[in-house]
Amino acid sequence: MSPVHRSDGPVPPVGAQALYDDVVWADAVVRCSGEDADLDLLSDADATSGGTRARRPLTARPLPDRPGALLRGSCDLDTRPILSAALGVVTRIPGPVVHLDLSGVAFLDAAAVAALVQANATVAGQGRRLVLHHPPYSLRKVVEMFPDECAALEVAA
Image 1 (cartoon, rainbow, N blue to C red):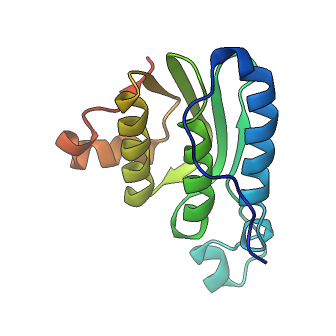
Image 2: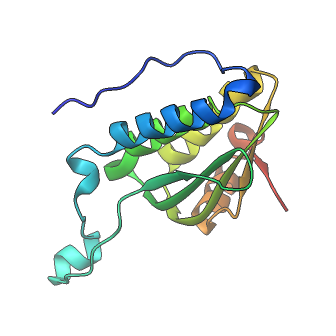
């Protein structure tokens, strides 16, 4: 089944915040709830050992106290479409600063970090800031390996 979604448009006026939140997050849920997103996936170690422990799929939820989102799960090849959809929503959240809480993210692969860099560039191109909170160890390692490419990422202390 093909997910249904709105086209990416300009950031709405601040006065439309409540309506925008309801529509955009509902839209993100539709785009992220495809058949693949609902599957419980085994990690490589669990699959080879015959284990039954399952990873949670990547989820994105709006932050209750500020403009932004909370990501939970793992950002890798299996969840790339979900991350892309979530970041598409995050870049359209109005306000001068958009927050992305990564405290629930166990792992970000290099492509996921590249997606964060692209989302940051999109927000910066609108004259706004994307602030990352609680980055996982894997993000810090990718930033160490690619300091020039990741220099624009802003991480809250």
